[in-house]
Image (cartoon, rainbow, N blue to C red; front, side):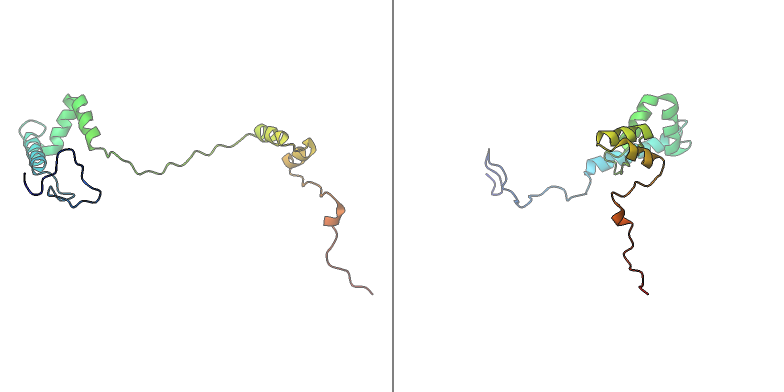
Length: 138
């Protein structure tokens, strides 16, 4: 058994040192070669199978002749995660809905009427209306 081999049935311990493999972010060589060959062949084919308009021509031909395949290619090109902020739609209540909610909360109908017609509610007593500054005595 090689020195760095694992024993059967034993899992790696958390935080173990990495033992080989590709560096993070480096694509598989075979995948990269296949992608390059696919793009080169597609460019050579073009719209008229003789290279007209290159890659764009090929995709135009695919869109014109095989929509299902073209749609699949488009789907594969779309990002898997979309970072978007969704703004909630603002909904406004009608005056009847607001009046009904105010009634449910126990607001007297007179107060609702005054609010609806932009009248200021009367203060509970006249003490709020008294002037805080004293008039000079003569």
